[in-house]
Length: 186
Image (cartoon, rainbow, N blue to C red; front, side):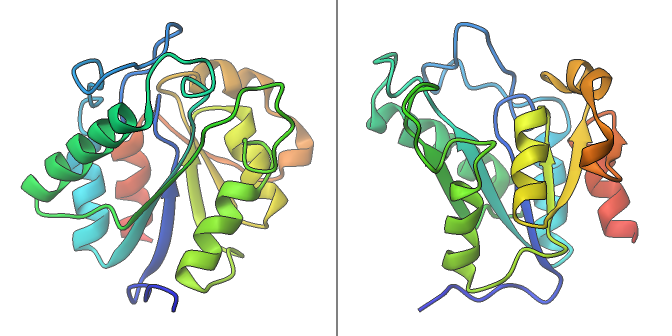
């Protein structure tokens, strides 16, 4: 049975570079998982405004042997705990455990993770905002007809320079807090 969406609908977030600091050496532990300024309060604000919040994240560090599933769960427990302490919730988290050369269906820019979220909530993703910091996040959103939103944190400033016309209209914000404030005000 699909989880019920809240009245406002669904917002999908990328993780590394959007919610927490990203690292070229990968985020490999809960201690290394550090939220970006304002991100936890932004997620709580989404939740308190009536949105269901899902996270979709490529986690090739699993395939590379840099951390295990228990460590990834600890990172996600930390995220959920911090958001709960701020008065909100993260309703669903999906991740791709594969490496870039594994040719799976779930690694963004392929749409598998987003389709898992749609299935979990029993909804189409037609106007669902997806907030990411990379072209592959935006490409995954476009692939399922979702609304791509770019933040300049993480890899976002570089991705902004690479945007192409095939993306269509992409809203761009300095960070997650600014994107969330805009969505809530719509």
